[in-house]
Image (cartoon, rainbow, N blue to C red; front, side, top):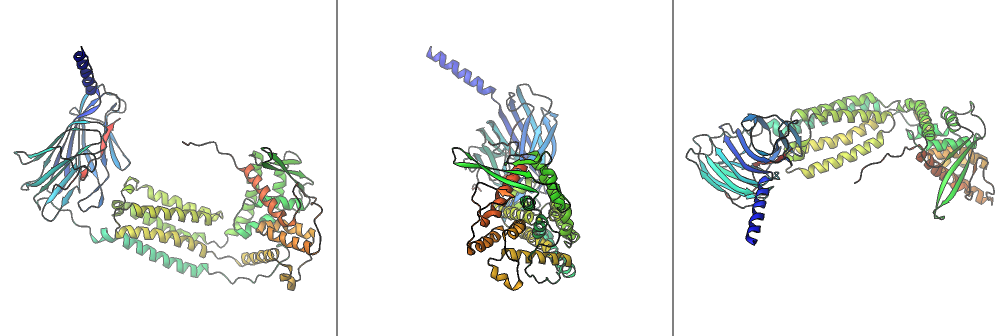
Length: 631
């Protein structure tokens, strides 16, 4: 009885194993012609059960390989025919993960369970090794990418007459294995035959055969331009750009003499704090809106009431600001301040800002920013000479086009991962980056964009060098030119600017005003007869100090004057109330930080979510290989 049960289970296991998807036969016929062209015909007989093999098989061929000089080289294939059971079969190809993937089968047809025989024929150049005493073919027959077991695998190698095989070997197993569970023999017609059986998933058969030297043409060595093309083009482009940079800077970029900066006790006539801050910084900044709100409050248009509520049993506090309108906007206000008053109190005379997102706050923030940009961006762009940026950008585009047309020469051969990049994408990427650079500088954000671009570029270049299997002169030339571009072009954009006399005079006045506000001690300014410090002057100029980023120094200076006079602030201002102790020293800094933070949080739309969540070889040592599966 026990024997009968055992035989039953054994029969069932054999039957189930027979129904598993597997490769019954994998045979590669390799024909080498006198030119060095290799023609490969692969016969792959599989059992399809509808698990992985639904429409057909996938054959993956590696786009890079290691040649006989231990260099990474690019593989190029030409597909001649794809058949199933002796008939032409539809197929399509895709490049991914460093492989050329051949999808054999019709997208709309599902195979019935059973055995199918596929035959794929393709050619490839540059697959042979040329040594001092012999030439060689060293080939991975099936590769390590198949997740099916293989019952029988073999290869036949044909070489042109009068060459004969001098030595040969074969290896089986996982990558790096030196096992030789395979057979090899020379057939009567002079071809070389290899055979192995029962390979597990992800195991490979590698064959190596040395033959008479000189019968197959050796590919010509790289020419002068192939070896040095990138060096010549990179050096020429860099020299031309340096010459262009220098000559155009000499003609258009030399700044006129800087005016002498003397302390100014009032802001430039007719200039609001936000306008002052934007021109001083050269671009819009988020904190300018809180500066304008304080300026409106100081001038009696609104009041600010800061409230702090305990959260989590008093361990934390939430801060909110209540703005109350005290009078209507008038012609005394600047353009952005009139817009701000209109947007703040569009729905009533009271507005609460508590850091929670609000379409209302977002709208007023955008309108405020648009007004400042419209008023001052043309003035800030004066003298930027941005049209002179175009020739260098065209040079960069031409350089990228040369890289594409030359197929990166030795570059992609030293960094295998670059073969997965579509070359035609480079001109598009360069063009997009160029226009983003121009746009960023026109919008006053170029400095930060270029810092980010340079940092990203440097990391990418270091990764490129780290990934390279060998460093060629062309690789160094490419990396050197990119580094040159990342450093020289931003520097040129900065140096080619030529501010007008009007801009220099205005910035000198702003610098003089900043000098007055930021002077740590009043006696430093005595020779210029500064006005007497009073609480009214302190509050009047506080928004300007906030716009210039010196509000803490301005508050500290006034606090020192109050302390030296023995005066203690016993009242809060009429325009600002808070539960905090009143302090001239930190008043501006606190309002700027707390109110500015609340406005920015209220104007920032929350995220909609994201996701988290010679016998010395080995198996895999040759060319070819890859893998496959079903689809």
